[in-house]
Image 1 (cartoon, rainbow, N blue to C red):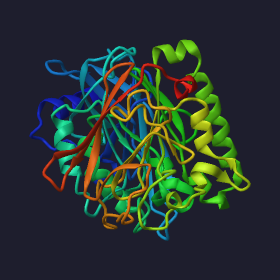
Image 2 (cartoon, rainbow, N blue to C red):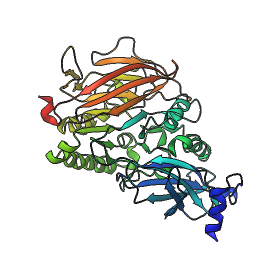
Image 3 (cartoon, helix red, strand yellow):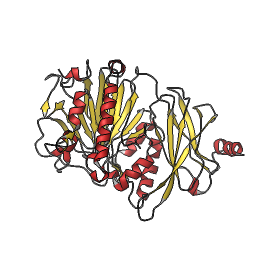
Length: 433
């Protein structure tokens, strides 16, 4: 019976082949499990339903494959205690670099058709990423441009560096639902990789942890994955600021980070994937005029909890992290290579060629109702470029020695307002000397 239903759903698109609205899939999005032959599909229904994805090569082939998964019941912490069911299905056996079309749902309702490219295998290719943070349901100014560029095939992966919807839990999580619907055309077409921000804190980050399906077993709070010649680490800065959930998470994440960095720094690993890139929401440094943690000399993220326990700057420096991506500040700021407030440019002519310290990029101006954040009048000596408008960052990891980063201004109709080559002939802590 279900095959007959699928036939009508797939081949007669003029028919609205769906069950009741409560079992109709919505909020569809992809994530990359870290294995090029797989892709994770996540979606929401409001009543129990099967978790099925039908997929096949695109174009020119029917949905010849079927994968099943599971649904978890999520109850929002608001007064209404709204219940939803988060479905997760891992697609396996994909051909790296092949385009696939898919639908998700069950015979009680099917999503629209989407397509994606399976991630290429190995380290010898050049991933293209969109990077931004702080995008809300209201005033998500950069989203239409990001969506168009995703549809044009400009990105292999999206990195959303914290703060979603403003907030996922608002109005008994109805705002979260609306936001996830709004990003669906983009997030259902390319892996949408995330890290938690301060706006996800409510009810112990439960809306964030339930809605997103990142690799690993830490409910998306921290994880890592490889893509091309890079190892990317996503972590939570928020464990330092919401200590009602205990110091345990701070210590647990720090220990995980060190273990992951040790593994990524093994000589044979670093030879294959020399770039180590981190993404976390609240930056260590910034020159905004808003009294955030990064405006203080002894930033908690940088130095850790008193008495200087679990600080991340020394940890990342110790293992030779190359590039640190941040958000939280609603602006764009590029720093000179920096460690402990000292600038370590590669040279006067080429500061980002063989720099003596990690490079920091803050890109938190995708758009939300809180608007943009101003800067202090005079830039700090370690601040290279400051731009106060709406936009996002493009990053292409060209090869083992070159990364291109550029900032796109949505206020200026897509104009590229900043760009650098980060060039490193050596990686790891030995590159600092």
